[in-house]
Image (cartoon, rainbow, N blue to C red; front, side):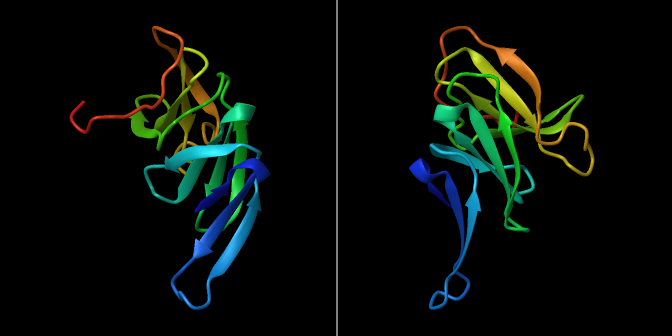
Amino acid sequence: IVNVKETGKILLVDYSDIKNLKTTEIEAERFLHDGGFDSTKRYFLVAANARGKVAVVDTKEGKLTALLETGGQTPHPGRGANLIHPTYGPVWVTSHLGDETVALIGTDPEGHPDNAWKVVQTLYGLGGGSLFVKTHPKS
């Protein structure tokens, strides 16, 4: 997966045949920055941080699944964090550089279709923003 930041394009590069690379170009949103996979490793979520959005790419189908507003200022997930929310099921989490919010995005289109690819909860931290979020396997 290659984010061509300023253009808003995401390139999926199939390098299974290194002499005949196959590239799929997906239009998303400008200023793509960083991101990571959901817990199934099928969907890649990437922040278009200067636009306040997250693009969701289905890497199996090779297409844009969703482009959503995070509700915060400058989403900055690093690779993001995956966890199981007791109400909303699997979620992917991003913090924001410009404010104290943390957005939880539903990532289970089969088990929790009403919550998929939406901000299902916003948490409010102490301070003016954070750089990355992580989870701990024993927490």
